[in-house]
Length: 471
Image 1 (spheres, rainbow, N blue to C red):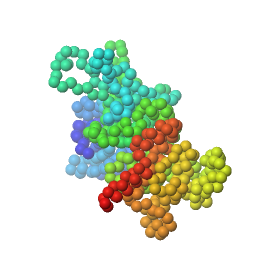
Image 2 (cartoon, rainbow, N blue to C red):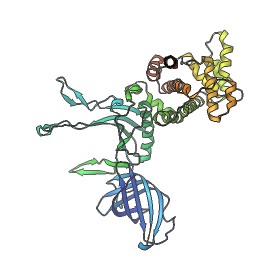
Image 3 (cartoon, helix red, strand yellow):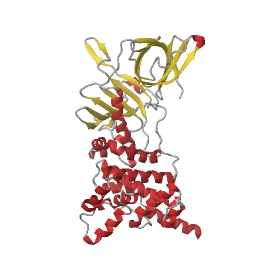
Image 4 (cartoon, rainbow, N blue to C red):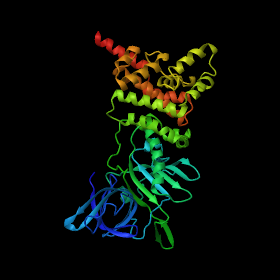
């Protein structure tokens, strides 16, 4: 990342002034400050390795505040008679700083995100009765709200032309963008508090759009930062440079379209944001493994297989049970409670698999495959009752590369794995959707069939194509 020199000035730490040089990359959120001390061989402890807040002003009059500074290096410039401490900052508050500024807290932060207009299903514009373009008044949706804070999705766009001279152009451009607005209701908070909430919201957006979402602009408001016009006071918008900014890495033209899975209205309808917040800590490791699969362009077929199997195993242990005692109770009181008596012994043996002192992967897969008999997952040319065993053996083989595993049962080859990865992803997405509040099995099945198809059809096409080649 290239950092541009912004100027020299002073920075204040613990009420003491130091000379500094500031370097910024506004497009990619890079902020670096060099703090100088007029002594040679200064102690490395003269300034701490991590500084939570710095406030300063350049000689040009530009004011700034830095949040979460981490020391990158320290050097002694003997010829200049000074020691220099170099820090990277996570955030820079633009135009806010000077000698008398303390830690800046905010009551509202707006995150502008790249290419989510289609996902949000709201436009800043509308078509009038005479097919003219007009400004849309309905431009926001509440995503989540509690006593402490609220989260909204808001669309902002350019103003339509209001004067004849504004339309005397060969090309008139209108731009709109989707934003996440977070407001704390009772008290102002540090930027990190907003970031924690935004990280969760952004994670769910990535989960529903199946791609990386980039932050293109960050703006905050504080009651301590304001302008006065006449007798009226107006809180001033603070431009914030964040280490997450990616202005030059938009996702336009991404092959994966947002409408192929979950759009915002469906998430709101199923109260997904509340459920996601409630389950975030449990769900996050599963989502991590899942998104790594979907966002990686270079992950091998086998690596995808290992990831999705681990995600299913993690899901089962976190959301169903990790206790063999509770697992046995679940089999009897939940999974098989309504099964005819003649199936009980066989089903119990199938689910328990080799579980004795702990729950095996095979047992977890069997439980997830049955899905409490609410949905049927296609297992291709693998018999339904053999599927958990085949998948667990294949996972063990590719982890340990023990050829003896092949002698004890079927192990999928790479071509077969590429097909059954679809079944496993189908299963994983089914359970993620359930945790996000989707309860209509038919709706879920339609969503997943459109994304993954089924293994049986894929195998039929593969066999047919091989038959044509051989003939």
